[in-house]
Length: 171
Image 1 (cartoon, rainbow, N blue to C red):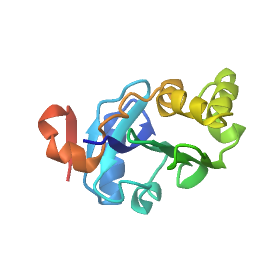
Image 2 (tube, one colour; image 1 turned 30 degrees about the horizontal axis):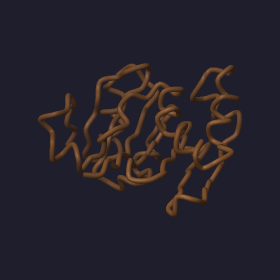
Image 3 (cartoon, helix red, strand yellow; image 1 turned 180 degrees about the vertical axis):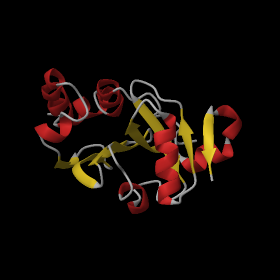
Image 4 (tube, rainbow, N blue to C red; image 1 turned 90 degrees about the horizontal axis):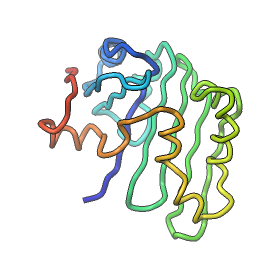
């Protein structure tokens, strides 16, 4: 089975903030306990990309992060309140060519990491070779940012395996 994960990560130590956001957006979802200052949640709507109903009700720092283990493909969207302030994706569907969409800058990345780590993050997002991209990618990004819930995290997967997850259900 393939791991395709897509989740929101709200910069908050309060799980209720994510629950409130889901309720305002009027979407169903699952909310994890906060870890490292991030509260992870998934929604039933548009798993592969950010949902406008969620982003338009956002009041804080929100990161939508997606990845797959099948091939090199991962990315993220950064929102400050309702405004998208950054977007990045990297893909290699042929195993030889990198396709990168890079719409992040120092200011948007500094929302995710401390200033000394911005250069490290910039280097990670601009791999010199495809081998480097494979070896240092989604997992290193998640570690730098402080995300823990990045594998096997999607609304559809959790719905099928709810007994394996410690999440709150928001209807």
